[in-house]
Amino acid sequence: MKKMLQVVLLLATAFLVMLVPPLLAGDFPGRAKYPTVKPISTEELFKDYQAGNVVIVDVRSKIEYDVIHPKGASHIPVADILFVKSVQDLVAKNPGKKIVFYCNGISCYKSYEAAKKAQNAGVTNSYAYDAGIPEWVKTHPRETLRLGKVVVDAKKQIISESDFQKRTLPFEKFKDQASAANALVIDVRDNVQRTGNLPGLEKALAIPLDKFIPNFVNKKANQDKKLLIFDQVGKQVQWLEYYLVENGYKNYVFLAGGATDVLKKQEYK
Image (tube, rainbow, N blue to C red; front, side, top):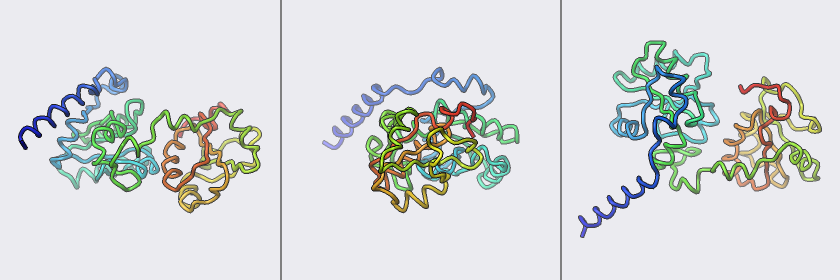
């Protein structure tokens, strides 16, 4: 009976694998742009992960890392001025292990940039996990931490792109809703990014994201108001939403495309 059950489970697993085909090399446009960078598949990475033969490095921003990352992943932002030195220190502490960099998946090239920098610094055993955190959490949710807790049900705990889009508004609708009596407009850009006010929203509260989360969201402030939040290009608010959900916020929207979509003059930083 036990053997029969094992066979049934094996067949069911194989069927699910057929339903969700693996990503192919052609699905990764970044590989042509970074031909010297060695990619690593989810299957190979997980095998090394289980064997303890790899160091996984998250090269995204701190908020992205804090929201979600594989268990045991190190955090070294590729934009950090000490990135190469930090990677070399990590290599010295983990002799013989693969160093695998990852970011936000197929459309994110930070993993390639990180691997290329490491290679140029003499770290020959470096790889880019270019399927990134989206594929990792889908295939290995229980080896993933979301806001410090193990992911038990990815479908319920991970905010889909479609659900996020339901919370975004184009500028004119965003501005219209900002005039409501219970509305609170918040600009979460940092000081470097904040190069101009949005027309009609000059009175928006300016609270950089790294201050907004601990000093506002985590304290559950102004949950009686409708929060209208914008960042620079509409990317960081995707990670902010996890904190809003975790802290019980229900009434909030984001500006589609961020301030850049309105001002047409900022670059992503």
